[in-house]
Length: 353
Image 1 (tube, rainbow, N blue to C red):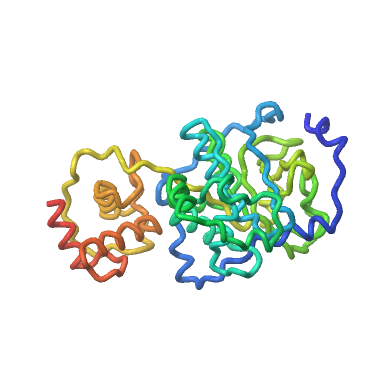
Image 2 (tube, rainbow, N blue to C red; image 1 turned 120 degrees about the vertical axis):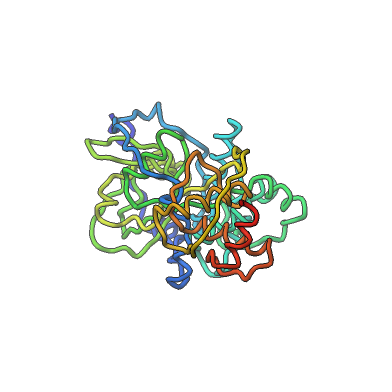
């Protein structure tokens, strides 16, 4: 089925692949800081496997293809694409958010590229203004580094399109597909590749070289020639790949070439109307899993709008719970430890007695 789309496409040159494939860099934060990443296991009790079928191109969810024009802004491009898709899911209107508004705020500025967690935190803390106010397409590295046109108006508009917390997914094609297909949510993917591997409709692993890192946005799950695969939207323009899209097969997961998978939440802090009642009697801290007290803690934090509301709570104490506890401590002038120790418990117990 897919061959029809590929027969007129040729691989582009190695030079172009080298120019585009340097945007995703390794997160330089220390291990302790990396532990604060938000994990899907904190919100989802389990991933429900999908029924894999070959999805024809006519049934793919499609969005405008971006072009980073040789800059190293792929993380910002993928993140702004995800923000636009989230707006489509909410309002049925795709909004083109500015990748430059994100890229020019990166922690390693003016170094090339950025890491996913940085881009997603920028989307959460600042949002991204619309493309019309800060154009970001077909711009080289120098132009992408400029934020001279950022104004109070662009910053105000950016706040409207702010993303929620980001959630990291297991680097597992089943888990990713189980989120994409039922919900339509985009999943951000980080990939490593070598020469001549990526710039083709169906990227192929040709060796062990992984010198380049790249960020893309997965929008569909499908079978391709019997293999579980994701349809990803790239930011190398419509003349690249399959009119700007590629089929990422399970081979890339099996070869451990996928280095990041995550999504942006737009969870509503609504829905809990009855105030929980609970008394906390022991310390609660990061890393506790399937814990009854942590489950109640999440329920209480959600009531205070310090934790994304779900129909259920897992009892897994990871980044979102840590963030909520610290916010609670800030609001109540308690030392910011992220641990539910005696002072924090006393305050919680006073509220939820």
